[in-house]
Length: 330
Length: 300
Image (spheres, rainbow over the protein chains, first blue to last red):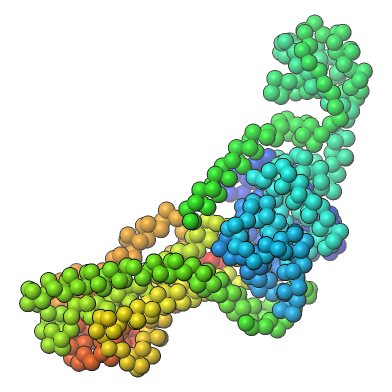
């Protein structure tokens, strides 16, 4: 196995009883990359990341992180990775500094540099002035930043982030991405993250799209978008059922019905629209075309969109859960 | 604060030497897990004060009430022996209430593992490059420390209740309270390591903690009971912790040993020496801790 790779995974599979969550995944992540793992809920993202972090054991296949086999020497892997979980994992009754001290201690950061490292990571996420406040008083975004700082404290080779911005408002998400985007350059770390936010995947150097436990495509965001080819045209008509075969004949490819809209890929959107209006017998009520997004790539590969509502409702549940638990504590 | 000797994190993974080098990191991890629990306990002083309310109720209200009732009925504690020694009911239950405080505190403290699981912090501990046994041991010692403080703090009430404390009895109490706290805390950790939600917590309290308290001999002597209850009390690990506390506290206060033996814990009609009782309790604690360690080591 190549020692140069930050992560290498070969034919990885994991079953829970009869359910196959991951069905044979291959991937390689180079050092210093920001690698995104993109897919809907239940696609196998979290299972894969849990195996790479040694929290679960694979049913078959191999995975190496920082050149170490995760099944062979989980403790060695753990000392070389940083983790930011989907759900918060800070001790809310301790201060930020105490949380970091605990982490430094269990990760064996040498005593001589412990204070300095803690100061550095606090500075990195701009929490120096709040370092001695109890975490309970922090906002959601601040807690996330502190968790990122903690994940980086022991200078890991690979930082894993499982849905790092879930449940945060868009402004905070951008802020968090400001830190994450700089990390590989500043600290020489490799980032492996999962997300179901399409816009976040754009920040990644490379992306793997996973669905039903299999990798559907892997490449840079631009490469993936080129798979769609040309422009994406969204059409609404007075009768989509009747319009579908007609559009198919003009475009030369089958439109996908999505939420009352017909979406079709064409090589040249500007030339397609006049032909569409001229040649269909059904009334076209609206038409728009644009460059393909990762959403379109996902739609093409899996036949469905990652719906924001779907994401929205899980986020909501999560936040309610937190609010409830937060109340129970006080 | 101890200082780590090596810089093993940054060096390449040692393939063979790993086994023998796990001891020091494990000890350090036990220390920090223990330290976090103690720090949280110390910071939560409201809880510290509030947890004194229950023992005080037992001693002052329950103890005084039952003392009056018993003397009115002409009965005595431990039969005539207690009465002959001039022992009031409140004085009799005083060591038992110390034990109760230890029992409740140890169980509650170990249940913080379930909180940690629910609030996510446990994950931070479980993915750390440390041996999982450190989690169980650190938690058990953390809970034991809290329970010890909660129990020993009640000694300040001794003059109010009229129990004379000697330096010797206080010194002898320290290891005995620790063994009781450690055994019960380990039991709590073993249970909590299998619990996935707070729902099970109520079950533990109703079906374990309260029966253990009532059968421990904290409130009445364990002699002269019906057979079924005698059996149950002897199966209660807490009973092996209460009896030594009573012997040391009341013995130090001048109660003659024949009176102590009369109300003491017997097994097959033999009065158990304190050392044997402590050994039984310690053995129970170690078995529980071993179960907890095994539970924490399981990986999906």
